[in-house]
Length: 200
Image (cartoon, rainbow, N blue to C red; front, side, top):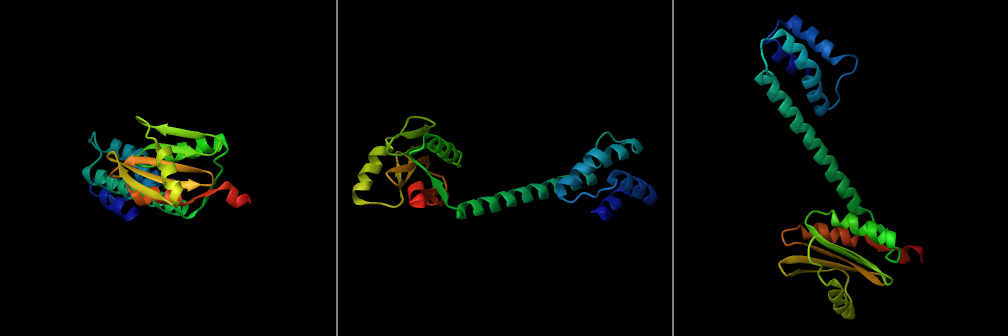
C-alpha cells in the first residue's frame, strides 16, 4: 500500500518529499485494514498534500485508490456479517412461549428478518403479534395443521408467504413477501427449541 501511495504522490511532488509526507501522515501506527487506509488518506494525507498542490479536489489517482479501499472495506464487513449469520443459523435458540417478555423479544427479532411483514409468537397463555398491515389469522392455519401434526409448514397465501412452526403448546408464525428467501425463514424457525424440552 505504501508503494502505491508513493507512486501516486511522486507524480505531483519529488520522491523524497513524497516519502516525508507519507511518513508524517502515517505517524507511529500503520493502518491495518483497507478502511483505515482510506481514512488515513482522506483525513491525514490529502490535507497535507493539498497545501503543496494548487488543487481543490483530491487528484484522480488518489481518489480512485480511496474508492477501491472503501469497496474492499465494505466487502470485508459484508463477509463478516455473512459469517455471523451462518454461525447464528447453526445455534439453537431456546424460547419460552409462556413468558410474555420472551415472546415479545422473539417477535421483534423475527420481525427484523428481511422480507417479513408479520409475526405471531403464541403460547398457551398468550401471544405476541406484530404486523405491518392487516393481521392474518394464523391461529386458524395452525389449528388445522395441528390436527394432522406438522413440523414446519409454509405456503403461498394471499400473494404472501406464510411459514409456521409448532412449539410446545403454541407456535411461531411468519408472514413475508412472496419474493423472500424461504430457506432463511425456515432456518430461523427450525433453530427454535421449546424451553420445556431443554428444562425437562
